[in-house]
Image (cartoon, rainbow, N blue to C red; front, side, top):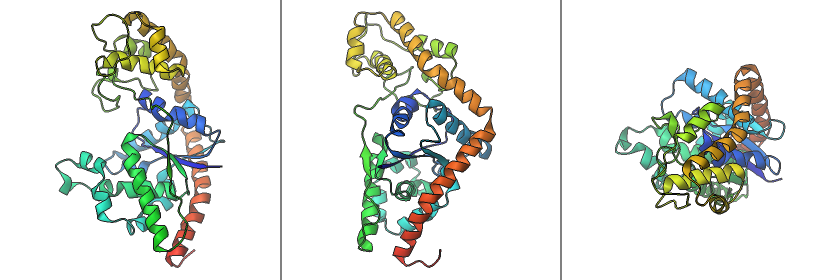
Amino acid sequence: MKRVFSGVQPTGNLHLGNYLGAIKNWVAMQREYDCLYCIVDLHAITVPQVPGELTDNTREVTAGLMAAGLDPASCIIFNQSRVSGHAELAWLLNCFTPLGWLNRMTQFKEKAGKRRDSALLGLYAYPVLMTADILLYHASAVPVGEDQKQHLELSRDIAGAFNRAYDVDFFPLPEPMIFGAATRVMSLRDGRRKMSKSDGSDYARINLTDDADTLALKIKRAKTDSEPGLAFDPERRPEAANLLSIYAALADEPVERVAAEHTGMGFADFKGRLADLAIETLSPIAARMRELLADPAYIEEVLTDGAERAHAIADANLARARQIMGLLGD
């Protein structure tokens, strides 16, 4: 069975964009592939974190993944720092990664901005740790969004460099997993910006923890335009297109069909239908999250068990990589 690795940052406040853009696909994949889903807390510390908040966010994301449908019996769910092989393999792979490759990474340039000289090494070397995350489990496929495609290409380059250095065919070259047209969920306050937890207004996003009343209110207050009727035109009418896209993704229907079915309908009526659909789909997730967060011992059990199962795969691959390199030890 093809092995798949994917990670999510423990930033808390999982929102509709996280669910429709990634988690919903992960739930379907666990039935078809050998899946590892990792809360990447080592990646999180590339920027300053408040320790207690990092702990809480790790638990909240774990609860969100399970509430959305990930089953610890069908996949491996764990947090990255519990498996030391991630950090060790990252160091080994650093030694096969030219600086020129890292200098081309656009995400570092965007995040570091003009303060590149004071940026931390962890932020700069982040793509090598991401490579180690994947190669540690010999994952052959990785679900990626647009912002991570360049990093996956780097993972293939680093795997190839290691294999060529020792004339082996050890690390697989991971392939991206594409799920057709990606659901790009935009802000409810600005249809040209991605939905984000960092937005100053909570009304800009739908959180997976929102209750039914909050969901309905946020959708009711979502920004629209002054043109009559609905139309899917992302360039000219981004807010209308966003609401139609959200409806289509929640209903598992093509957005063109949803737009055709609601042609001529006013925003108020459509928002009512969208609110009903969102409540039907998302309220059970919010309720389950509350149950799970009220039982931190169970979340700890899931993460501990997941780490043990991840170790069983990671330790064998890391030992073989060390042996290939001539490093003495177990």
